[in-house]
Length: 96
Image (tube, rainbow, N blue to C red; front, side, top):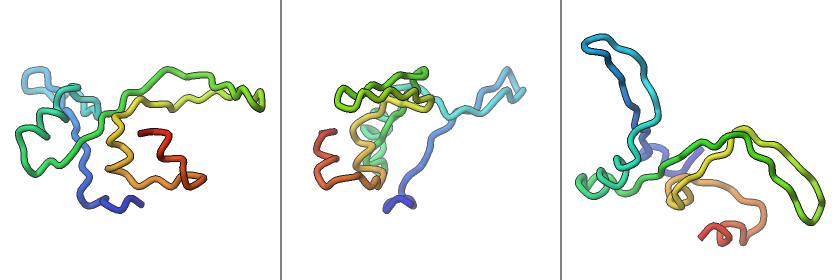
């Protein structure tokens, strides 16, 4: 679905207790993205996502309230790395 999908990779973390595998997690250290981009020329960019607790959104215009469970903070590079379609032609400019 994303134009550059073949160039997008997800970093994961394998946790061990000694030689015993404990779990695989998609959460890694915050500094990995900047460090990889700085030290590895093949890494062109990175995006970090951080999940939030469920959040309430309120529209001041329509007075609609919604509760969302899957909300994330993200680096603004998410819009360069992933191809998202927005409603309305000027929607992306709101994020820059």
